[in-house]
Length: 297
Image (cartoon, rainbow, N blue to C red; front, side, top):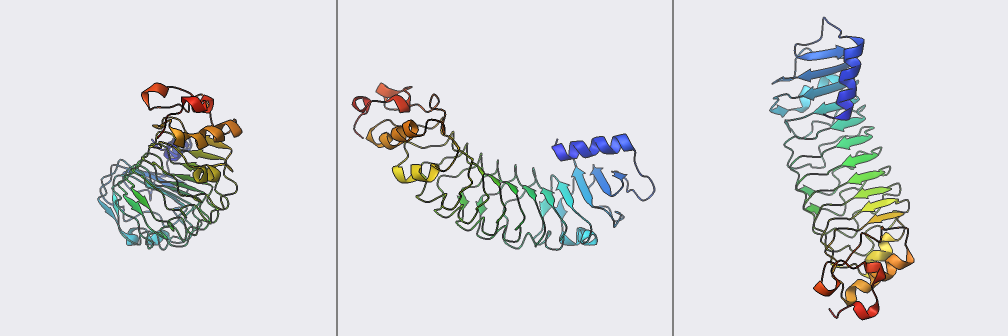
């Protein structure tokens, strides 16, 4: 269960439920509502509602007009198991957190999110396949963006344009095979990037240009056979780089990575970065490879 939803349920249970105007299938406390088992959005939701949680519902589709009455109040919105119509979040200027995990979302366009002070956007466990330019351009206050566990195979270079305050981007467990050179440019406050459990085999030069506060980038369990010096130069500003569980091929092209590991021993756990091929070097620590152990490409 979503942590925020769990905390809200506990709070409502402890404080008691406000009766009267609270719709059937919902529990109400002050200006928060937790609803479950519904097939439609209740028509009688209090107009003062600031937090809406829909759990285990059967609402097939959610339209912008379903939320129009909360344009001046709604700050938190959580829903699962539904589809969303274009423009649903264009008239909710107070919304600071949206959780849309485990829905049926297949695409997001630039018109989905209007200007709002959103701090957290949870989009994991959907069916997204692409992230296009300017999808989040109106979310200038966003700090956390979670796109993990989708089917994303392409992220446009301008997908994160406008996210001036973004600190964390999670793209793990998708279908990415490559990244555009400018994917993370213009994100000066970004400090954590999750790219593990994808199929990346290379990093473009300058992929992290301008990301001067990067602390952690997770690249483990991808498809890297090696990393050229230009890619390693991009990673150097990071405090921690996770590189284990990649199919490292220990031929001459692995030498830049070997030297980088030796020169930056605190950035990666060197005991986990090991050769997979050729057979003669399988299991060897890359940082300890001698020139004589490296085979021609």
